[in-house]
Length: 197
Image 1: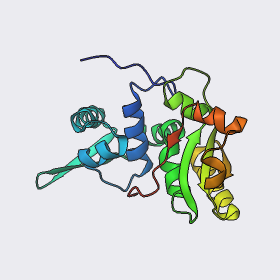
Image 2 (image 1 turned 180 degrees about the horizontal axis):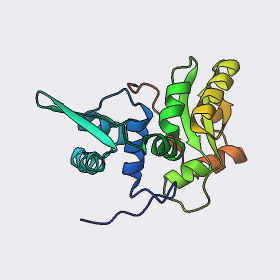
Image 3 (image 1 turned 60 degrees about the vertical axis):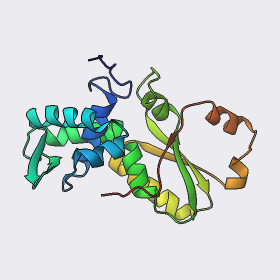
Image 4 (image 1 turned 60 degrees about the horizontal axis):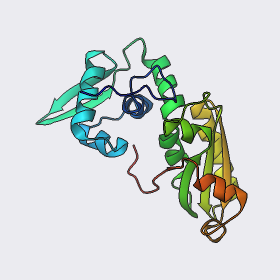
């Protein structure tokens, strides 16, 4: 089996998948997940996700139960590492989940992206830990709603969340320096219609 590199977002985690699973499961402690659901959310093969879930269950970080033939995984809130590990995973790998939950349902948003240093580390580019999360909003949402949602996301993530709003006609085909720089840099698209917990 090939060894995967430690993710630049927080190299203490073994892989980006591990960080994403920790952020998803620990970030929603009341939720139960199947390996298939987590595979869809992380966009990793089901067998790879199942192997990682097994390791995290063996470590006591996750708990599992069977219902019929379905195995449901959840956070093990009784583990003494639950609180600090949950916070660490959410800060480092949680921005897509938190941004989707806080901004994804706002009327008028057509597309949603994370850019900047967080997106670069997520894409595997080395560099210092990101201090903030930069969000590009395409559409014409209510600005007050956006700023309130960004404040909630900032409280949850423990880091500043900066939003930039561009109308679709301003973004598509734009040739200004900002648009060119963003298009040549990592962009993490946040799905608006994903089923959330």
